[in-house]
Structure formats: structure tokens, C-alpha cells
Image (cartoon, rainbow, N blue to C red; front, side, top):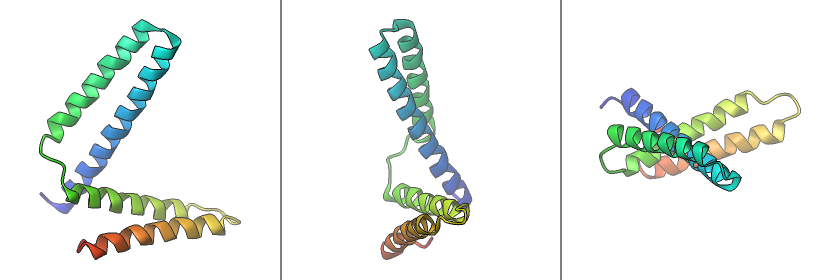
Length: 113
């Protein structure tokens, strides 16, 4: 698998996990509200998300996936830092610092960002 395809799969996997967490929170909300019909729809959606994840990510989770997610997160931190406005120097430095720490940890494992 090419690096670009692997990176795409990491992003897709992260998106599906995030979506599933949002569905779980929605299920909790509908359960508290006592809306059984909406809860049933949320459960159907959750099932569809889990099945989609299983279809594309049937193999065992590997540490390469962790590194890919970490490097993707580091890039997101750098992107957020680029979008900081004047007067947000402290936030900019924290974002860059976080990205550098993540990348350093990945390099220490032998993976290059």
C-alpha cells in the first residue's frame, strides 16, 4: 500500500471512529429524552457505521496506525498554528510545540514524519 493510500485510510478510520462516538452520544441523549423512535434510528446509524468500519478495517489494528494518526494530528496542529491571528502567539507556540513533540516521539520509534 502506498504512503498516500495508507494516510487516506488513517484519516478515514479516524473519521469513522469520531462519527461512531458522536452517534453514541446521540444515543445517550435520546435515551435520556425518552424518545424511543429517535433512539432506534440512532442505533441503526451506529450499526451502519460499525459495519462500514469493519468492512474497510477488518485486519488487526497495528502500531503503524497509531503512528499515522499521531502524524496526522501533528499536521493538524501545525495547520491550526498557521491560522492563528495576531495576538495569539502563545497559542501558536503551544500548537507548534505539540506538533514537534508528536513528531519527535514518532522519530524515536524509527518513523519519519
